[in-house]
Image 1 (cartoon, one colour):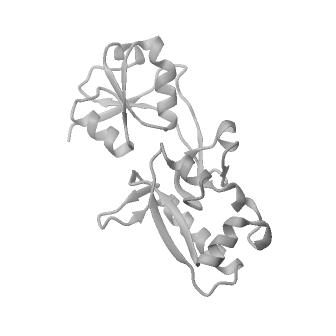
Image 2 (tube, one colour):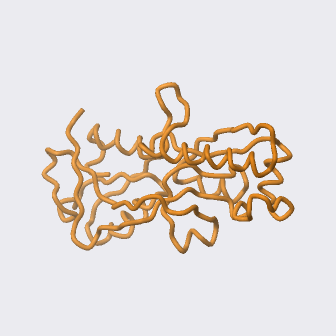
Length: 206
């Protein structure tokens, strides 16, 4: 594997708050069954549907056996157990649904999943569509490049190719900065695919 490093140019460092993504209806108190369609659905079906990412390590990913794993996944399993207890259910079935940064919000809004167990940037714009848990970490958005690329700033990206995960926070920043720095942008379905494009040389930054 080629050596990869990261960089951030002055004025382009962002610190989003990451949290679990919840359906708006799930904000009702766990015991308020009649006022929470999400919990009514969970109680009636006996199932809670949890979304996860396949390559958002270490928060949400598929392990060697293809099973959901990670810090955010563990938090969601605790939420599922709390829902079971508050709803007075003997058992609750957990059904997992893989999501990408691009389809996570439609899946939440349309009720396909009850909780997204992955890192999600909490923004005012997104709060108009969905609700967020308490933020559990603060991160910095940075560019990844190969260590031997000679790229040290955004100015070095002119004429080069930048890959981002479609629908991610990084995607938005890359599109915003593209006219200023003159790079080409391409899109991957998730972070894992973005990294493969970077490592293989089909993109010079991610």
